[in-house]
Amino acid sequence: MPRAKGKHFFGFGLGPLQAGLFLLEAWRSKKFTRLTVCEIDPRLVEALKHGRLTVNVAGENGLAPVVIDGVEVLHPLRDAATAVQRIRESDELATSLPHVLSYQNGEPSPADLLARGLDGSRPRAIYTAENHPHAAEILKADVLKRRLLPQDTVFLGTVIGRMAATVRDPAAIAERRLAPIAPGIPAAVVAESFDRILVAKNPLRNFESGFPAFTPKADLAPYAEVHLYGHIAAHAVLAWEAHRRGLATMDEVRERPEMLFLGERLFDECARTLLTRHKGVWDPLFTEAGFRNEGRAVLRRITSPYLRDPVLRIIRDPARKLMPRDRLVGPVSLAMEGGMKSALFPVGAGMALEELVRHPDQAPPAARKSLAGRRMTRDRFEAILDILWDLEGTASPETAVRELLWEGFRSAMG
Image (cartoon, rainbow, N blue to C red; front, side, top):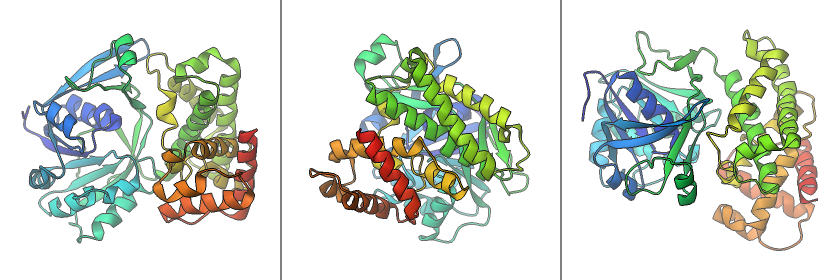
């Protein structure tokens, strides 16, 4: 299984970003001796026991399957001892999980395994890819609850512009001639070839990353906010509107001029907030022209006919995306902090909450009773927000933000 002498990589979760970014780039770099991933789906673990998985890479002119070999896939419960040993032997690690709350989920959880495996035998970098502005700090805190950390272990946030998705519809897989991730698994990973991946600068001296595609930034926070509260947020609201109009994949947006115009308006609204907030950052991105050009490039990429990103993938798990620091509510709060009023993102948040009201089964169990039935009143609206936001344990947005969200919900409901 090992290909050459070099570094060891360990990943948590075998979702599309883990496969289509970390494993793909680690394999391409030829700098890693061992590639190991911990995955909770026993069927996928069994299907990949021979160490080969396939990613469909979407470029400007088409799709091409890439076979990644030499991958060891472990189950966290069945293979816990081996996972701990592989963590101990790894130089670079990455989490690519549904949410930062996933760090403590499972028996054993990712935080449990890290606490058992990390030691002082070598410098280590642990990347977090959960689209949360404080993911690295949260994972570090979760591990610290279990043990003191070795001195040369660092947790680094990321800003991942590359989009990746898992296609599970058999008809879509056949029609697009996608290669499944593994034989016998009715799922295919599609990842775009975009390679502008930003990471927090590693404070460890003489640490050479095995990921040449990664660009370190001394201050990652402004870029992370542009990504989450700009690009991802605009993508999400555009997808909610696409869902409302009955579109199945985001490439269909290109056929609707009014939808493309909405996309441009969303990026313009993001620009007003984020350029004001990060005035003085020395980077062309943080200029009106730079942000506009970047927004147009992102709009082209998210509507790529080769990526064909499923709308339902983007709008999945609406409760998580309504959290105070996530892509729908976060832009409203940031605009308010900058003395501006968000016009489009409250409606996006309203559409997500409308989906929860119509389908309470998509909400966490604690919120389902409040969502089911009854006419939506302001008091009930506030109670639902409180229940959802209490699940994350973060501070609730101020009253003015709640007012805008209420207006957005009423607008979404028509």
